[in-house]
Image (cartoon, rainbow, N blue to C red; front, side, top):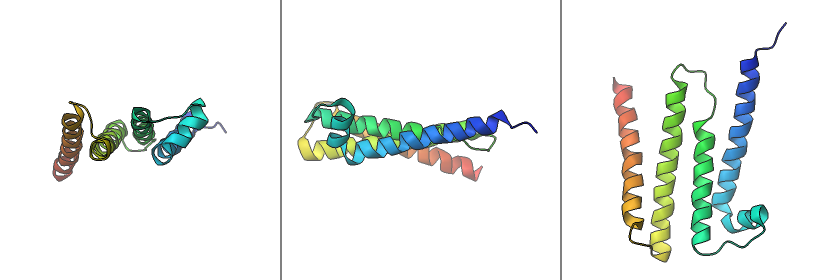
Length: 130
């Protein structure tokens, strides 16, 4: 009996997604420590914010690529990833703005990411009603 190669691919994809998801959580939860372990350098100031943004991006990548058996799985994965990315980046940037101030484009970026997350949620709710 032959094994289905797609089952192996799905298992490998799931493994890769778990690794990225865990790495993203680690970068978010312990940014300075994770950067020190990963790069052997101290992350201070703006580097901490960038490390958190990187953590958000790879966490969203893990969500976006999670294998699914549904027909429209590619659209679902893309939606999950984009929603996670935009919501978490908006939160991270807003925290940065409240805690440390920010540059000229910080609050417009918060607004753009928050609005994108909200629009993604509203579009999904609208599609579910259809």
